[in-house]
Image (cartoon, rainbow, N blue to C red; front, side, top):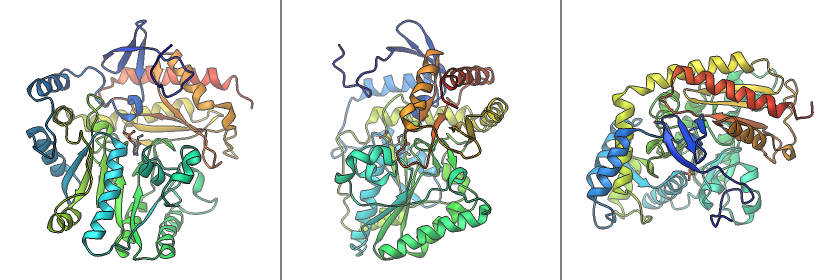
Length: 444
Ligand code: PMP
């Protein structure tokens, strides 16, 4: 019996032993095409020689230096790299070890900012339904995914949740895109006014929704409208780019494509591409300066923040992406993938929607395309799909099982940026096979 407390306690996992480009190889020698980057992490695949060399070099030079004693060159250089390329107004980078920690830091920075500027009454947070911001308690409270929150609800801090820009299900019949966007922006404004315009601290959103909805992009104008409302009431905008950032949607920051900036931006996953655990919170000049010229100390911190090996690794990852000019490739491969998914699944009776941007795409599974009715969560369609795909040598990221009745099962695809065009065929063929196998067992 395994003594590891695994994610699914009753499940037997294959033993991953080696990476080879876009594949993971298990103990039996079976190859799995990584069509999801794990959870949108492995953007450079699993055997990048330059990144591996950077990990080895840094760890052999300096194992660990606590940030209350030292700074390090990799940490300084990575911060410079990110700020030079970040949306306008970003000034400083707070390094952590992953996405949830990045969100926690953003929430505390927002709160401390208002304390520093003499508005300590601002304490309310607004986020969106069906969102995911992490599993630590603050991040979980921020997220609006009913299924993940359910049993922890009594110990979560109070956060308001407004509607996401999820046109497939939230846009009403006969409602234009413009009217839908205006309604959502008004909903946020109404919630700010309901809580008290001078009581709200921040609004949190993923520019492209990942884990809970499967690559849902916002409609044009949505984020601009949100930004305007936040500015009108002095509410900070926190963009959670943990999953959709770092090139995943074809630009380094997903916010670039929305034409907005933010007050705080969280990143992780693709930052270190899985070669080391790392995340970060990008902080605007306004927030940084308020704290720097106020108490001069952010009341936060973890033992492993700014770990030199993690920072050197992330820097090597980002240099690879830039030097090999991979972002245009993400856009082009993304278009090819979308075309192939549409060709294969557009008429499929159980696929209701195909969506996404760059190499971040999703398929929503429905029992009935015209009513958009989801399958009963007890059928565990997403778990069956994952199992069938793994049996066929494909890693994809099916999710669902919601309890709010507002989403169905879906499959998230987030393959490495280094994929060959021919591997897109393998991806789509294996996915179609898994769908055929699972859908054949389901009630019509
Ligand atoms: N925010 C978003 C948008 C995410 O997708 C995730 C992870 N799926 C997180 C936060 C949490 O990141 P981590 O799992 O690294 O804590």
